[in-house]
Image 1 (cartoon, rainbow, N blue to C red):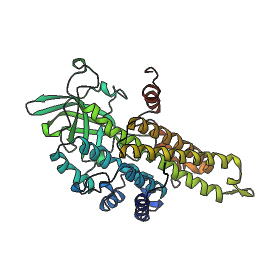
Image 2: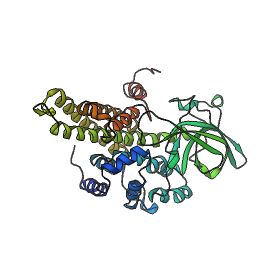
Image 3: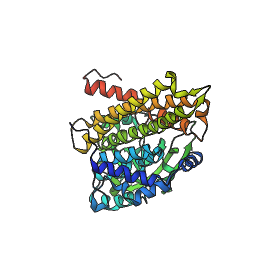
Image 4: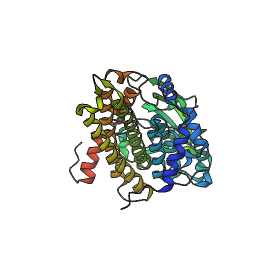
Length: 389
């Protein structure tokens, strides 16, 4: 067992840190206040080749692994740019990995270079109001019409539609009543979000989330067979290649938000003097910060292990991804809570950014998968307990 951080990943972190130097706290305050996508940083990452870190060189990528992408996320977080880390899910994960794993050569040639150079971003259309976490119960349907499919239905709580160019959509192509398993009969489609048959409305949120969120209507959207990703009726099984990666990376983003506010809280605890001494000298402040640090360091190891398992094709990636997401979310939450306490009333001031991270971290403990469903997975598939839901 070797806990040395390989030199190439250390170099990645240094390069990312150099990029982020051009984006001070004021930039992130503006991004939060305007509730917008951090386009400038995203494009700088693209220009440096960092959006292509997971993809082969023939598609202008770096041909590296998920651990390398995790190094990028860690570096962004450690430089206070955790919102920029969340932006990496838009293209490289939702679009890029899905196409790389399940696309035809023609689809890879068409889509991957534009994801790598930052000119196209993708959303993921899975969630529906009447399905929730029971994805096999989705009502959006795609009916074959010659060499086309006609898609009708809607999606809810879909992030990033406003700045995305394409959407990876899950739709039922065979009725649930007509398949042997509820997971069968679902297909993944690539949609152009500029299609006039697609409309969407923003869902107002009461907390800060780095991606604006939408409800989507699909009114007889026509797509060709070339827009099917992978196999017809086999999309649900394919989806987990994307979801496992999303759970690892979004878990790392939560970790990053927690790391950012913990660092800020530690600085505040050192400098803030009430009565006669810094508040960090009181155990009521010091111990929660120490616990949060310990939790975050433990979660960092679990995240790196999950990324290593996926990068090396080891068994148990589903368990590792779920475990990493669970532990990162809990660790980040303890850091956010400790930071809120440390800053006191100042914690809700927009210039601090603490409450924004706090809200994001809490939301990320519910999406893309709730911690309850993660525990169900671990109980049933890891511990061998009866299905509990």
